[in-house]
Image (cartoon, rainbow, N blue to C red; front, side, top):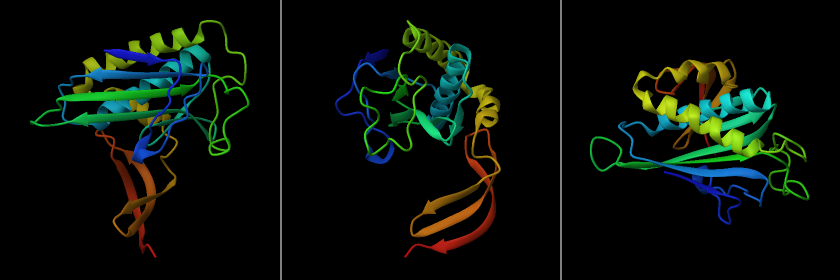
Length: 202
């Protein structure tokens, strides 16, 4: 099942953050799944690759993926993806994949909280029908990957589009910061890093 909204009054991102969803400026959709998989991260990465492919082919732009679930154009975020799942047995009972894409800038621009980190595919006037074409392409690519999720073939494209490989990363674990260089992303979407040092949080 796929649910679409023209706007959201309480859009959510990771870690309980809000996701701005102003009227008529973006794509806001949720995919309700009953997956034959125990790894929701793979569902998220498949969705990220699907969004990238849709933007490339439909909008002729070159997005990148910020691990694990954000899509960037240049140095600003254009799309957020959030997968929430329930697992009561040895596999996921259900998963909901939320995808929010900033198609055009909202009237009056992005709010002060996100204006320095957010962007849209089009500044003002988007081509007629572009949202429908993007939605169709995202769903086409996602369900192709999803139906073959166990072969993880989409991970090659995920690594190709990553904006993290070769860069310094900070990983927070309890009261420690583990700093390293991201050298690769494995088949299960885990970061492979060269260790640099540990640092205690104050």
